[in-house]
Image (cartoon, rainbow, N blue to C red; front, side, top):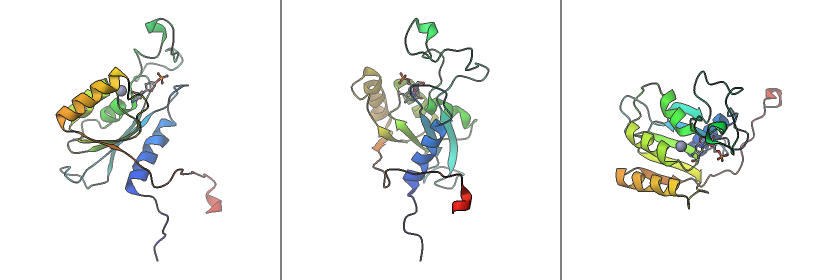
Amino acid sequence: MKRPDYISWDDYFMGMALLAAKRSKDPSTQVGACIVSGEECVGQRPNTILSLGYNGFPIGCKDDHFPWDREGNFLDTKYPFVVHAELNAILNAQGKSLVGAKLYVALFPCNECCKAIIQSGINEVIYLSDKYAQTDVVKASKKMFEAAGVKLTRLETQTSKIVLDFNVEMI
Ligand SMILES: Nc1nc(=O)n([C@H]2C[C@H](O)[C@@H](COP(=O)(O)O)O2)cc1CO
Ligand SMILES: [Zn+2]
């Protein structure tokens, strides 16, 4: 008989996004994104991970030379420099077609990532938290997603926690 407590596809892909977030050096907010092929992705089997990304500075912009601060003069903060998880995941796909793909991300995408998501052909965004729903950034995103016909799904996970234990001898 099969193991009953295996994780669902949705929890698996959101888990991958959360694991990617662990690579982020942002001291306050770590975000990860996972892009997965959908049923209608040409040349791809469904449920295949196409790309992953997390928030960080662009290649060559060293974490030791660029600021991670949230406050101060604009150029002394992370905001002009950081690449969001969603955009990094799209760019990390390195030209692979994302038409008809799904994007899993913990936090609802901002308006800038929203534009890149729409233009890349991703047609569904699955997220966990919409804690900035009241901001104009998220309102602008929703306006564009709706106009572009991108499906928005808040994920109700089947499991509340997944623990990774590197002590494989214990298995
Ligand atoms: N959807 C998102 N994806 C992201 O990768 N981020 C990143 C940008 C920053 O590095 C960090 C937010 O910083 P803070 O303002 O909470 O200290 O998370 C932020 C959002 C929210 O729109
Ligand atoms: Zn963004």
